[in-house]
Image (tube, rainbow, N blue to C red; front, side, top):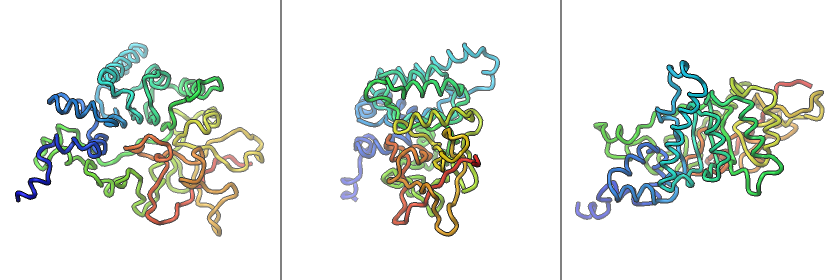
Length: 346
């Protein structure tokens, strides 16, 4: 027994003092619980705010003060925007004062009330270093404003090294994984054994979730693209609601090579169509019955250009890179072909 005591960490602080463990668990703990943990002692404060990459992945979708409330409909639109913008500024100022705002690379704002001024600030202000941004189901920023923002980001006269944003989730629906617990819920549950009781907080827990121990998606023997806007062949969840306007394909074409999306353009014989303008790929096909392919060639993760592949959901937890957001672990199997088309007929 004495030998075991020498091996096991003596406290949660000792456990999280391992940089690898803290970086891997922090996305599961969540920003609210991390900030709360930092207030418990000087040691935890230093651990949370001084360890690199702890705030690399920030998911705000469960912050209640940012969620749309039923009574908001009775408030003037301009006042409502100002109210929520101030709430975002408060959160971002806290992170800036702790010198961690520049560490945030992946920001999740799904299903929140997000004023236009907040998105502009995130994408235009140099204090942010956001590489992956998710704004699915936000329902506030109008289509033409979002197109204007993206058009400005990729303008020919943009500064060298911009845009910093590399991937944008906006066309699909937010994934619905099993509910995670925040810190106080974990510690209060009778069966809890600490922060690692959270679903996915354990190293290697990805074997039971959407990721493996390296943060890559696993196929689980199922369709690896089921969590993209392109579900089963013949079906599509792309361009629903807010973003369904004919101007979006032109925006995506302008962003080619600069910003990747969770929706892609159709690559099939544009030059043979009466209307040769770019079009959204809105349906997934299985390919030729005999050869399983298509004239333009299927898209494959790792080999096809990034703009041929949609960003897959959920956004990667431990990397802000587009190639990781499109990558799938296949466990020695061949990559399934991805054939996406528009419904427009020649």
